[in-house]
Amino acid sequence: MKKYNKIISTLIIILIITIIGCKKDFLILTNPNELTPDQFWKTESDVDMAITSLYAMVQMPEWGEQWDFNEHFNLCQEARTDMIQWQMWEPLQSISEFLYTPSQYMERNHWKWCYRMIFTANQILENVEKMEDLNAEKKLVYEAEAKFVRGHAYFLLLKNFGNVILVTETAKTPDDFYKPQVPAAQIWTQIENDFTDAKTSLPPSWETKWLGRATKGAAASYLGKAYLFQEKWAQAEAEFKAVTTMGYELEQDYWSLFTGLNEFNKESVFEVNFSAIQEGGRLESLATAEQYSEYNSNWVSEWGKQLFLKDTTTTGGFSKRFYGSVLWDDPGCDVYYWNGLNYNDFCTENNLPTDRMFLKKYVVYRPDWPDVTKADNNYYVIRYSDVLLMLAEALNEQGKTNEAIPYVNEVRDRAESVPLGSMTQEELRDHIRHVERPLEFICEATRFDDLTRWYGFGKEGGLKALYISHDRNAASNFVDSQSELWPIPQAELDANPNLEQNEGYQ
Image 1 (cartoon, helix red, strand yellow):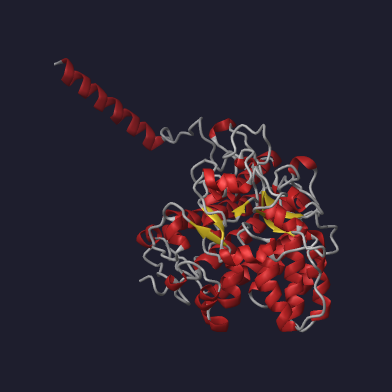
Image 2: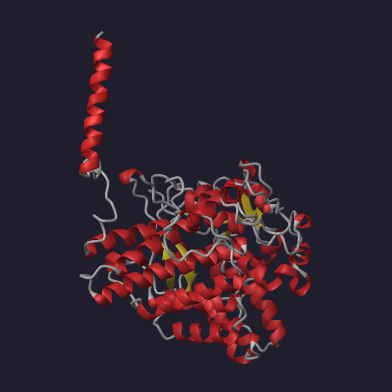
């Protein structure tokens, strides 16, 4: 009987609450443990927190581990180049062999990560605009930062997936979650607009506590890069030349760029900020070098090795770029994971071939560092040397070869490599493509992008033919006009009936 009385009492209470709720908003409660949009977006401090979240998205926090950015941004890009040989776990090994599938998690997470950046940027743009009490000048800067990150995200999506979904505002209706792809030209226009707007309002620099936020130089450099990828040579030239007047310089100690001890230096145009702090449940660290080096699962390809062995000074020694990028059987080479051994003894102890060239960039070369897999090194998205070499390329493609050569030599002079003499347009083009850029940016996630824009989709005989000529492993698996792009993730196709798979992956 007590059981039934309890049930009846409960039903009566529910009925009373329902009646009261019909007359008043009795059941419309605010969760005291969660912020709502109406409670947030009130003060400048709120926007600062949102901006911090925006840059946190750029770190690619998929798992909250040190492997996030490393695997989903760096390794999966480098895996497709002709500069590195791979013996890696799945799906990286399949990606390195051009055996993509719509179910590979790195591709899926890369897609999700980019749209998280876009969503966060769109939130900031929509809400900052409505904040009447926010200083107008600061409002423009906040909006410029959001547009910079959105442009960055769309650049990554476009080059990795091709035609993607264009989202410039947060979803208001259910249909907004199921948009179709748009042509690549429309995405390029959005990227150009975002970087142009960002360049207009971003400051040239930030005070120390805000280092890592986008600047005018970063936006101009990225805009020039977008023009370069579309072969808009004159527009790219104009942007890059503007950047050369903004106070950037090359760091003369090449190796210092990657040690974690020279961050936000005069060569840094835009870098992703990392630390080894583990407070708050997240690990903001970078583990790039360890997966290249300590695990001995990646090394310089034979084609790349020969490039480095020829990167010499006027006296015949190896360049500073050589010693800052790779490890070889040379008295000037050593790194923490050799544990005091010389090159040959290290190879013997680890059952490795004695003709293997190892990778050095981003290694935490500090003996007292507690855990080398949790590095505090920042990661460059654009360095000033990249601006100089892109400027040289834009000039050369317009027939201004003599004007272009000094910019290449500026990069070579820093490395103490033998300077270039007189060259034809074709000779300089070949040098930029197959000597200067691969040497300068190994392990910086630029090489596959370069190869795709130069040879992808059937240009100049296609990328497969180039891979074969460079004796690239798994070159036979590459399919021209298909393997340049990843397939759209299957989870996205299942969720959105308006999405179409990339050609070749049907």
